[in-house]
Amino acid sequence: MRSRVLIAIELALILPAALFMTALMVRNLSPLQDEPAHTAHQLVMWYSGRMWTLWVLLLALPMTVLVTGVAVLRRNWNRDLQLLFRTHWTTLLLALITLGAGGILTFVALHMAAN
Image (cartoon, rainbow, N blue to C red; front, side):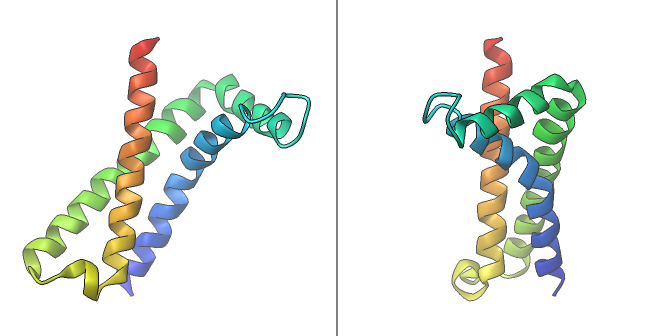
């Protein structure tokens, strides 16, 4: 039960960054005057117009997910060295969310370094 709550919290924390990354991709699919590129562009402009959104939603929340996910996965791995991914779907889902947070942080860090 505790791992399901943790997964729900981590999904809620990673959702704003995942939404922003998705909007970045969608706005490049078609001209900006067409939907859904127009809506995606509006969302990207909302994020970029507020400095706190970039720091909190794109750095702090994914970093929290990454650190928490790695800590829980390491604790589970040390406690039970059996094949965790086959026996516990929650562990696999937690690993995927943690990997996604790492990918988002890598993308954001590379973008920040390029500017």
